[in-house]
Image (cartoon, rainbow, N blue to C red; front, side, top):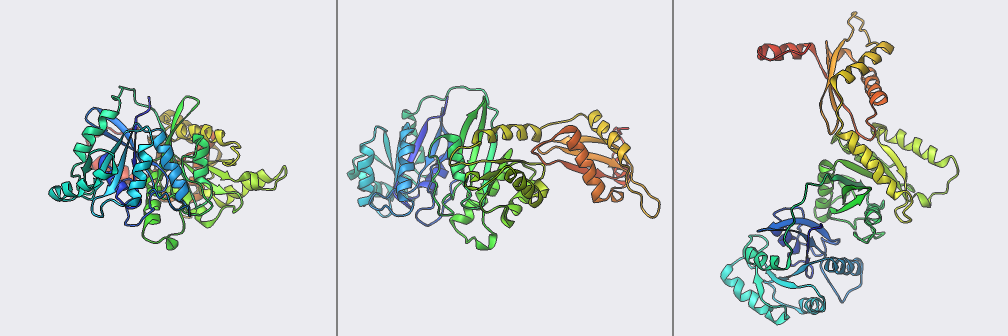
Length: 454
């Protein structure tokens, strides 16, 4: 059963995101002293007393202006209200009521959703009562003086809010796969999220930088649940100024670290750029599973060889993520979009996979029959005693050897290839840790009671 939704509504720059952070006990919503930072509707989990619910942060509403993103923001607010059990109208207690607040209040009174009125920026409890009293004229009932920054009055607001929310049912923990959608600006990340969800969950615009916050949505496909997060487009660091875009990119990097699988979206028209290479390197360095999604494939003129040539180009330009599966899609037409989640499920399973020590050593034994470690000019040759998997996500193996310096990069890559050919690990990086005999001797001397594996 899905959690009930509470929509947070208001004009620009009244502190909606600050209040959302306070109500949810998180700092995920981007807060910056500039109107229009929040554009899409973003969901945050919250609880109060015996109720669990979702708080939806929406963009600032402006009804008398149809420029740029404002009509799309209004659409997102309307969609949030359509699924909400209750709404909170946030107003600015320091500036007092104005025409924009009255327009939004009139609009909300026409909706079928119960509305609570939160008068934000009432940092002083005594002065806050006076500030809040001015908002009785909006006709939405009692105004609650609150402070999103300090938390004043939020308890009273939540006490009355939960009367509109159903009790939280006891459910088993869901085995969600966390998926982050990342890429350069305007490659179609938000369109891809909308294609998964089947609705206009995120604002789509040809203007790069439309998505600023990290937007997540729960999707179920073939019995598996996926928590999919759309992130801000990531440009070169020198092109990013401090402000909303800076915060959005940091959210994107955090989403990569927290995900099980990353969808790296590439624009088929632009091909693989230097920034795509850097993003792929970031994904590999963070040890995340990955699926490379080539979007806008419908816009490419192609013949029977095009897809193979393009795939070869990607493998060449993104050689450090050659283990990632590649899929060619069109988020606009829906071409192959459903197949992405099948690849995600496989990559997630391989990312957390564990292999027994006996199987690892069988692979090593077979690999050494075909290719022995190199010998130095001084006659020293590397020896691999045994290997074992020490962790997963990503799969990490420790190989115990006589001296790690005796194994060059070519041989190390050969061993990794053997693991992949014999064991799979499609869609996930594999870590190999080469540990020398001196390290083992030091550990045994420093802990003589420790059992030694032979």
